[in-house]
Length: 193
Ligand SMILES: NC(=O)c1ccc[n+]([C@@H]2O[C@H](COP(=O)([O-])OP(=O)(O)OC[C@H]3O[C@@H](n4cnc5c(N)ncnc54)[C@H](OP(=O)(O)O)[C@@H]3O)[C@@H](O)[C@H]2O)c1
Image 1: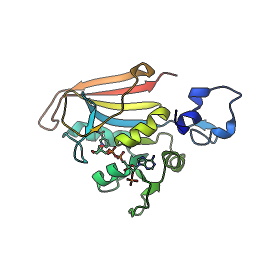
Image 2 (image 1 turned 45 degrees about the horizontal axis):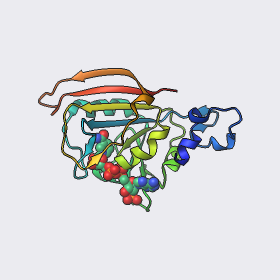
Image 3 (image 1 turned 90 degrees about the vertical axis):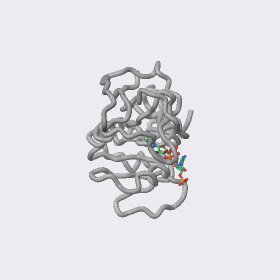
């Protein structure tokens, strides 16, 4: 279990739990809800050659609607692939080394410090890539998952999900179109307490 999982009150919950450890997830008297958003193929592929391996306009539109106004926590490789700050949102780039970032884009040297920077946000989003998803999964309470209904070639995989820990709140399946390369299913998953 990593340090953040140990800080997660949903995993301890005991009144005798040391409150000084609720530094990042239990923030100023409230639980910080952290969401994760990802598009993943049937074989768990999420990336290829530092980019997305598909063209899905509906997914990009949904990503924009969901994340607008929020903090986006991302790994440095994903930042490089985006190439710019996404308008209307605060980007936080996680890297172990100093980065030359545009004004308004924040840097964190760990997931913990990224969450601290986003603490005023009622729903910060972890937006990838695989290394950062792996770090964040233990403290995420909601996943906005786009399942690309195909196996796709790629070199970056989403970590294995323990499906028994999640329940589905919503699901919607959409066909392939001239703007969406693959049929796909939007799902909202919530961690079972
Ligand atoms: N399908 C999707 O929804 C989706 C979403 C996002 C990304 N992607 C794809 O995923 C791929 C990128 O994923 P990735 O896993 O290669 O990279 P990533 O998670 O985006 O970034 C990895 C970088 O994060 C930093 N990092 C990782 N662990 C850290 C830690 N514990 N402390 C501090 N910094 C840490 C390091 O940066 P430094 O090397 O600078 O130290 C590391 O190189 C791309 O192909 C992208 O297009 C897909």
